[in-house]
Image (cartoon, rainbow, N blue to C red; front, side, top):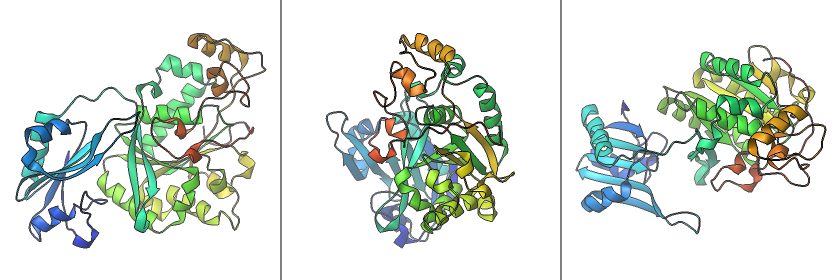
Length: 381
């Protein structure tokens, strides 16, 4: 938990919930220009029971109705315990508001003691970045299942020899460096996104991951984006921030009139005066050849790592298929996706890959592009 002193502008607030780091309008109205402190906590709570036992505390609410595959749930709540004592609740986090740091912390601790629940084991999570009405840039948390975090022996089966050693070094670099750019290259189905899901699970306590859909890369060029990152950095100062750009070929290609703004944005975010302030890591997955990447992005000091994800040879693919209880169709080599699809060629059968495979309602445009480029490792490790 952390406690923060706030100075707020009423015009920046929202009626139902907080903005970036701005309390809801009812909270700001109640406190006026007096002392206002807040305390954050992540976890899981039984909001239904809290409302059933203390219905008089319900002050604002948003109810989300499910479909055939989802359950109805409270999406956002504001509970009011006294004239200047509030608790904002939203799925995986609560934020209290009070006149003193001690009171703000007490509200969260007592609510957690009464209504906190043990969350089932999960892998990591990421923040889906999107642009809302009035050009506001927001993010929504997406939890990943426990199956995305692989045991060491299972990880070794999924990737060619040497990948586990590279992974260990890469994790150390992410912890040691305050910013930089990483490029994960390989044809569709070779395991780039599966690797990122695994990475999110391993680093969930120290790193906060963000995801920008391929169809939303234009957002990198917008001035509001800097304000978004600045707010996230202030709110999560105790964590490393990592943004993932999937199928980012267009944003990394040699600069032209069509992509100049995107390339420049990545240059500024990953290395430079802006990156010194934001302390942001950028991880891009691509299908194009390394020779097509703008050379400024590959400059020593900016590039943390560049890894090519190759197809599996017959012995390793067979070992993985055997562990899965599958039989491979004859081929010279296999992508990870082909092994999971019983060795069938990608144009015949391929499971859903990329971040669109997550169990959330993400845009269909998150599906990967087709490419067959698998050059050797260039630079980095």
